[in-house]
Amino acid sequence: MKAAVFHGPFNITADNVDDPKIKAPHEVIVKVLAGAVCGSDLWTYRGESAAALESRIGHEFVGEIVEIGNEVENLSVGDWVITPFRYSDGECAACKAGWQSSCAHGGFWGWDSDGGQGEYVRVPYAQATLVKLDEPPAAAAVPDLLTLTDVMSTGMHAASSAKIVPGDTVVVVGDGAVGQCAVIGAKLLGAGRIIVFGGKHPDRQALAKQFGADEVYSARGEEATATVQELTGGFGADVVLECVGSATSFATALTLAHPGGRLAYVGLPHGVSVDIAKLFRTNVTVAGGLCPARRYIEPLLPKVLAGDIHPGEVFTTRLPLADISEAYRQMDKRETIKVLVTP
Ligand SMILES: [Zn+2]
Image (cartoon, rainbow, N blue to C red; front, side, top):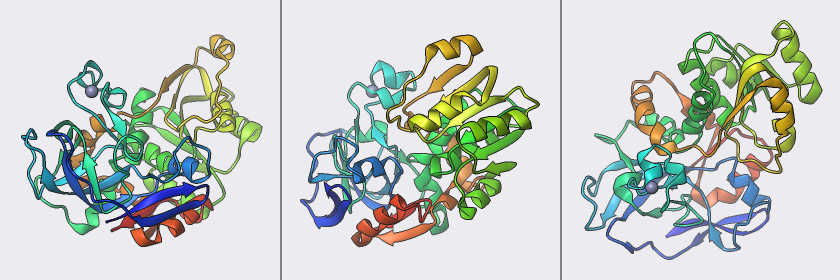
């Protein structure tokens, strides 16, 4: 079978790899029907993560079960399934409390099990990890469903962690796929006003508005701080959703909430440090972290199947797995918001 393999910085290609085999009775093999490249994959692509050379990559995929371990009870060959970006056993204290991303026996695709950018994936703890659909979805719904594996769940996690209440003024920092989905999440929780700070790409600005943003700005740093001050009568925003994870983005985000406000962060942090003394003076709550995507898939699923939300619009490019190096190139150059990878 073919799968994406990381050979070194800026060198990810679709190569022949061994077919996956069930190694434990709690596992299944999923045939990938659609996968994606994530902004967080770019840390590996650029050589800024600890990924081993020749390792598999990709953690967003949906597909069909083609083989099943003999301890797996509530799934069958032929089931159409959504996979959270981390597998989890569903039995440990963290899982039972809804923090599946901290599962004692969990792991990441590409690091602890097969990468998701490939034709087939071995899924550990399948019964707890996978969410199956009652029937195969319409082709048009697949991009929306694919976002539940990560970016839509993560955007929702940002909004939920910030405890958005109806009427809140919410600033979203970042116009990538997670920032876009955070706009949807904020809207679902009843935000009164949504202000997005991102880049200058007109397609990203238009999408944020389509998802429910009231205003979109390309300002950064002090200019962003001044803009939010101006827009909020010199007070600041009720809620800030940090959806980038860089040190500069986080530093800016911390200046945008008003005293007593809430900041949630869901972008994979790189080089971020927080000055607790500053938070002390402002009483700003900082929440968020690695999204327990498994917790969000089931509540978001009916909204996607009913067409109430269309997070799949973040996929502005579709490429076959054979062109995975081009998919990474386009993501890295910000020529596209997000790439959907077909087998
Ligand atoms: Zn667990």
